[in-house]
Length: 369
Image 1 (cartoon, one colour):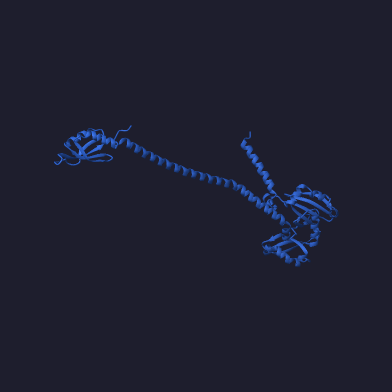
Image 2 (cartoon, helix red, strand yellow):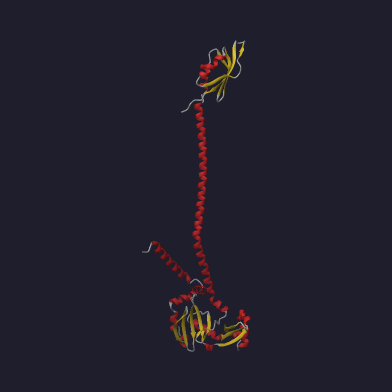
């Protein structure tokens, strides 16, 4: 039983296959043929009185139509015209993905074989331009020619070249007949032993002139295709990068907010602690009124104060009394004072018949719940 994953994977393969089929026509034919190994060629072969249209596809040859040469020149309504009108062929021809060849009969060409040094192979086309005047009765400007290496002898340093020459009027007539059927061939060759061709008679410049609009269109389509593919592949990564940056920014903002919140919380705790300390201090420390009240009741009537000093932890008393030594006991019995003691020796003042005293006592803090 197929799982949902298997069905999804099958649908994905179908989608990719369909998409590759749609964009396959945008890839230049030379590159597509090199990648796929397929050679698709439409051949318009001219014989003495016949015109035969064949299609060569991956090594297979199929005859699409046959017409008399005289009928082909006079009428467009022929078997070849009907075959070329096939929608598939028309689509391939319009897109420039189908190579078209006009094949001339062997009797229309002059074929010869010549030997040349092996060193000239790199510039063989230029060498053949010079050899035409010596090897054939034609000038280079009056003919189209093709050449191919048929033998190579490394020992003697020689190569054997098959040179095929066709006059320009013959090639022009063949191209005109092809245009009569709505074809724009990029190859013109000569039949060799009834099989294959001699090589392309059209110069490279002419082939480029014919193919240039299609080549430019295909190149532009390829550039656009690769740009779209790159954009398609880059867009998720770009969006993910943007999302990551946005998430990082949000995390940083949240981090800053958290740090500020922690700082404010610490500051609030500090203020709350200070406030509690002040409140607790006020609760535990006796007020001045309470201290005065206790001292007023602890000191006898025959005693008066000359100076009273309060610190956070102590109270200091300076004054005169009839009996200074009797002051420590009532002060120590008070709930607000502890450890009363003299800071200096008691001195008798005869002018007022009183003892001068200087007493200090510790202030007792209150217990808080």
